[in-house]
Amino acid sequence: MTGFEIGGASAADMKLIRDWADEEGWNPGDSDRFAFAVADPEGFLVGRLDGEPVACISAVRYGGGFGFIGFYIARPAVRGQGYGIRLWHAGMERLDGRLVGLDGVVDQQDNYRKSGFRPAWNNFRYEGTPRGEGIAGVEIVDAGTLPFGRLAAYDRRFFPASRDAFLSAWTGLPGRTALAAVRDGRIEGLGVIRPSSAAHRIGPLYAATPAVAAALLHRLARHAPDGLVSVDAPDANPAAAALFEDLGLAPAFETARMYTGPAPDLALAELFGVTSLELG
Image (cartoon, rainbow, N blue to C red; front, side, top):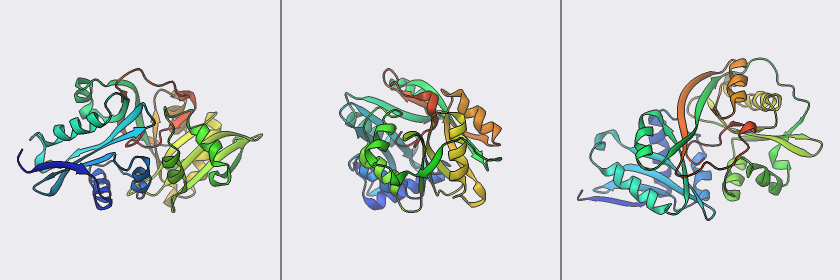
């Protein structure tokens, strides 16, 4: 493999990685890379062949004990030549000693099992324009008006490590909308919508009840052209699929959440949409 080198991603590389993911049909958010970069600035790796980028992976560290793999892509022209697996090993080495998670596409899940990953649940991407109206008896507010510490504490119920820098950027970047559901001063839901190449992506979508999830979904969909949205729903919460099907959304894409060890204890009954297939 003479001429193949692995190094950290530049700002230009981050845009390139996003474009590659779009070509794979993953429909990443237009500005996701800006939040990704602050999550772990050294967590994005690019493989170059004779100086030309040909493969990428993200291996993002959270806190002292968790990591997440994403953006594992080798360009079609170099697949099957060993470049991707070298990048995979570099990413996993960066996360050595941590519990590692990923959201794996169907045709790669057997390979991930060989690397020690075990499935925890499946994510099904639901797409469409939600029908009806969402009425939940809660107040829907701009999440940016709430103390950030409260939002971060709420997010920790659904993610196994603190990710304050990422969450601040994810909810506050221009062009996206973050809404919270509040009842009697308590946060009972959080949803973020951002522009993407195709349907606007919603994630996360946390809610105490399906009714709260529906209310947030409808309010968020107002910020999408024709109300067309997509959300990655875990089948570990059966109420999520039932809700989205009732609202007229259809499954369009499937991944599996997998971990190298025991799955973290998360509030799955209130998880209606994961934040990001790339960073968890």
